[in-house]
Length: 363
Image (tube, rainbow, N blue to C red):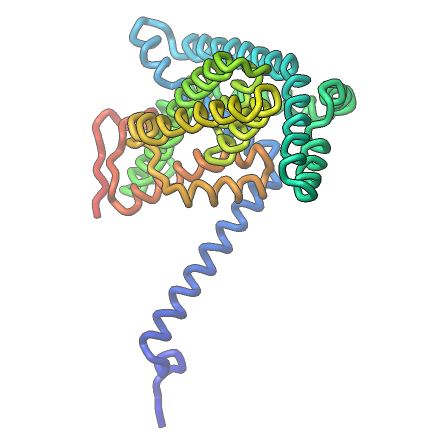
């Protein structure tokens, strides 16, 4: 009679596969529960994530102000004031550009649908119908936006509440971020606190790199594409440039959609030759971005494979819509930074919240 326990009677390969399967199932369950909690508490989690991204973008201002004798509370208040002015001004410029260009863009999409339909026959009729339904006339688009604002007071209230909460969190993160390391040492005694601190710093570094790099790249892309469209005489170039700027924060998908709209508007207003020139401008700017700007600006901070980025964007949009698509890549980059620390591949970057000396994780 075999006195071994049942699991010991199985081959070693099956036992190993079962252990790994259990670990994977446990990981997926915990990750799924965490995502569920974040979605259910999105009224708090989304403002917190936005505040972390804003803090990562603005934090370099704090040491400069403190070195010049400004107290941390005052420096955080000044930085938040600059943030409010910059965001308000940027949104005003973007909305003004889009609203003023909306009739021209919508009319251009309609005309592009007519041209494509005439070229492709019955199949083109379906494309024309899709473009007509998606764009509508300029006046209808503006009226829809106005009616949406008037009828969406609840959504506006939520946005304002989330904005105020995000701004308050940015202030506290900027003012008290340097205490993160001491707080972790008090909460988690021993060597584990060093690991938590290093993970937090590496995640912060990844988010900061994404925000600064993407903002700079978006500004460069929008500027050069807008200049190219203006030279070609494409109407609504300012609004199209605004679309390019916003689309840059959603990798691949945003660039594709904004570039497609620009080419279609050029096709409608200048013919096939102008559309091909506009396509050349968009492709040239995207090529410069992919081969020069991104490796130069983001290679040291955000090292995500393109397939990982696309999966993250799709998953984020499925979980939380456009906000999820915007937050998917920086959150994934932060997660990758944490994994690199846990594997012993990264040092503490010396960002806010750490000790003055650099810590190397013990393997």
